[in-house]
Image 1: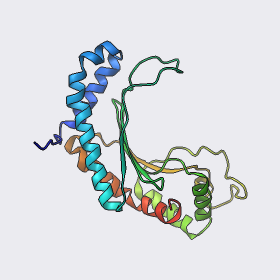
Image 2: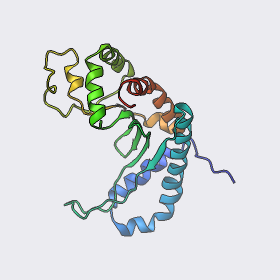
Image 3: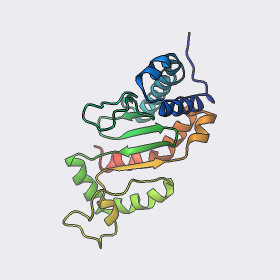
Image 4: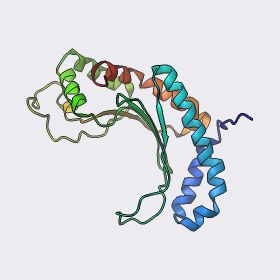
Length: 215
């Protein structure tokens, strides 16, 4: 029997479970609610992740590695001993470092695409691309995506670049990931379509990265 994802039920059910988990973040409650978690969160999320992986593999003509992150927290070295995360996170990655990301919690519904952290060779390619005409293409593209980048971790552009460089702020980044926020309403209409549409919207960024960095 083919299993299907209930288009309009996935996001509300997951969020409702996570809200209840946030109010009862203990192993006893989770154990009692495990059948609900399996039926309304884990199995539908696994199906969604697999279907998005197939879509992305078809688009990129590469094998996409899907991952649904566990709710269980590793509390061994943490002062916070609550046993569970109260968010659902998933990722789809390519061998070249590009990826797609999804997060749903009681407070956010977001998705992203790009490279989370460059390796050493990619860092050099990134900086060289920004110092070429490709930098202007990326600078023109990013506003068109109408997304969000996290603040750059470097306080200043790396040598030999300085703050006068036309792409000084981009040079301060150690990865290139663009987030699209406020997806909850569209997820409630059709979760799979919402993610496919979001990743389509971010496809020009992935194409730029494929040409210049993720090789």
